[in-house]
Amino acid sequence: MANYLKRLKILQIIEAMSQQIPFQIRDEALQAFESATNTQELYNFKVKYLGKTGALTEVMKVMASLPKEEKPAFGQIVNQVKTLLEEKYLQTEMALKNKEIDLQMQSERFDLSFPIASREQGKEHPIHRVTNEIFSIMARLGYSLRTGSLIEKDYYNFEALNIPPNHPARDMQDTFFVDETHVLRTHTSPIQIHSLENEKPPLRIIGTGPVFRCDSDVSHLPNFHQIEGMCVDEKVSMSDLKGTISFFVREFFGPGLQTRFRPSFFPFTEPSAEVDCSCPICKGKGCSMCKQTGWIEIGGCGLINPKVFEHAKVEYPKWQGFAFGFGVERMAIIKYGVDDIRLFPANDIRFLKQF
Image 1 (tube, rainbow, N blue to C red):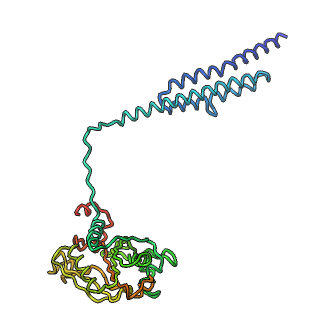
Image 2: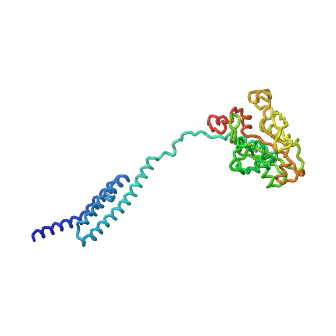
Image 3: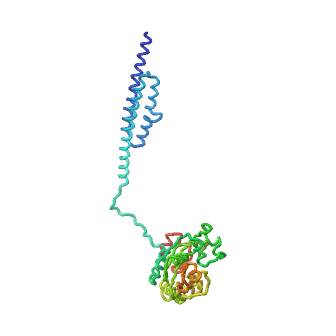
């Protein structure tokens, strides 16, 4: 009987102690949370008391030694303590985060009246400048701007411009093919076809944009820019074309320059010509830019081939026209005396500063 009473007393003591453990952990955890100085320290305390191997989790193991009728009450106490600590943790975490943000803002505060370091002012890219200058000159002659898609159907890039299927320009080594029927446009001439199809003559348009060819060296880029002009009216002659280009050359390169037209061939114009102007660098005397000839080739031109009008369903000979095209990079090279076309897309600030 004495042993039974002694064992009962021990169980009562264990039960009483187990009831107090959750409250002890609660008090220790609350004190620890209050003492935390930053969110990381607070999180470490959370792991210590509420983690998977934390103090409160270990307390739950005491339930195994409790009488069956005491387990629900003990579990309820532990859950109440856990809920309290979790709420306290969230409140303390929010307060510490706000404090850390305030400290960060104070450390990063700066004087708005303090003079800032000078920043180098940017400049317009020479290709963009040349393009805008060409637009401005042609606008004075009544030309309006058109743009087009960079990916064109084979039909608009070749066939509609009277370029037959066996023409060398269709070879893989010259053209970037997207698929069997689409290419990265090799020139801006498709803009002319779209304009002829969608607009009624008379027309005076100028188109521009990047074009793509499988070519790259000191004087060629795989991605460069073109300017394409087209005039369509009831009475258009070669003399109109020559007068337009001669006016443009004088306005763009400066007064006193001469132009000459050499017979050439383009599938989309007939007759066709290459356009040269007297070298704006040496004024026709001969230099490295013009290779001592006094002349520089600037582009191609000609009267629009009747087959092009036929593809665009424009009545010919009621409507006639001329077209011309220049490479923007080439115009910039001639105007500014640049010896390597690859400098333009390189975006070297030392080069761009010169313009």
